[in-house]
Amino acid sequence: MDIRDAYVVRDAVNAGEVSAREVAEAALRRIEEADGTLKAFLTVEPERVLARAGEIDRKVKDGPLPLAGVPVAVKDNLCTKGLRTTCASKILEDWRPPYDATAVARLEAAGAVVVGKTNCDEFAMGSSTENSAFQATRNPYDLDRIPGGSSGGSAVAVAAGMATLALGSETGGSVRQPASFCNITGLKPTYGRISRYGLVAYASSLDCVAPMGNSPRDIALLLSQVAGRDGHDSTSSPEPVPDYEAELRRPVKGMRLGIPKEFFGEGLDAEVRAAIEAGVKNAESLGCEIAEVSLPHTPYAIADYYIIAPAEASSNLARYDGVRYGYRVDAPRDLLDMYQRTRSTGFGAEVRRRIMIGTYALSSGYYDAYYGRAMKVRTLIKRDYDLAFEKVDALVSPVSPTPAFKIGEKSSDPLSMYLSDIYTVTANLAGVPGVSVPCGFTREGLPIGLQLLGRQFQEGALLRLAQSYLDAFAPQAPALRV
Ligand code: GLN
Image 1 (cartoon, rainbow, N blue to C red):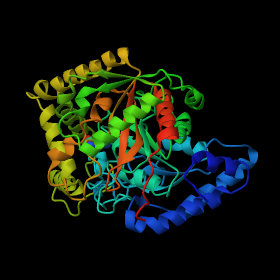
Image 2: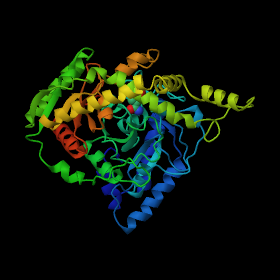
Image 3: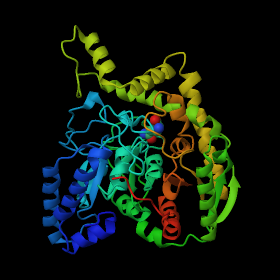
Image 4: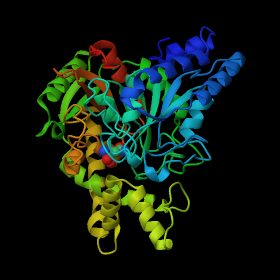
């Protein structure tokens, strides 16, 4: 059973041609075969998966379900009731949430089957999935390379056929970048489009639940199930959820695409540049109009993001005190010793670095100079987008300045890791949606993703563009390594 297409799976299950249980068994077999090498999953409980699939088989007898039997992988920073949720951190190693994230609950209500929890950078802090306390996930196109991050496990689960769809999360590019490194599609929705309830908080003004799949069409199907207002998250938007399937059928001819010149500067790999330039030509041949635009505050984006995200993280992560959740050191001398040793041994190096940077940026006397000023720069970055979207309907750019790098290549150099987020973080700072869509391969066979950015709540337009692009120009992929 080929589980790469959500529509194929759900139509077959709804029609009774295949059972959800058989689909789940196929996903579990593929996990068994490939995940020893790829290490995308942190938790897979086969009995639970099969029991859940059995429930779907009973339910579809009463009528079709929009995601009947579709196997979904879930990033391990999304709460799953009774199923271990670690955030790839030692501090939550054995934590089993008492509730489901809204996005997970809505997927299950639509008939999807959660096959497992995927590896990520600890608390989603990173761009390579190497910051996991447990394992490094491998890129299925080159096993010596990272899959991207922080939602690397979710990207690999989809790319290697271990799940049909996946949930990841985005704070600064964590779904678009691994999607681009693994030749799949990833959507960062508008801030507030999908409820954050049950998404373990990293930087609350930036965090989004974000889907991944083999096609924009599949992502549209998932989004139509999970998007929309949720009483459990006051930042979830009341904006009505459009009919994304209908949006996908509309034409792309005449759409105006802007090329932000600041996204093509120094540091952009020559092969990535060539692939994106070819992608722009392809889009033009679909009938899109191309214009150059400017996002002049882009040079400040990395500095801005790496103040705001750690500042909010330092506040959010204060809750891991050894009392309320997960891990606690043995035999503390007193309360302070318990806090200190729990946090300094429970968190990994990158998380500790960000807590320290963020605490500094928020501390009295520095708040105005750092966090306060960073929020003002954020407004300027948002304004750049507003002005650009007065002229064009969407922006086209690379997702990442380079293809997937080698495992270990950047792990001792946090600054070079941070700089690789240059083309993704501004969408999070501005709250606008973005898609990464496969657009080519390097000579060495590494995937390259093209980024499309749009106006707030224009996910439908982005997915339509992305799907039309793939229908006409999907790159020929080399064989996977496993
Ligand atoms: N790489 C960025 C960071 O480390 C983005 C992470 C994310 O989107 N969760 O913060």
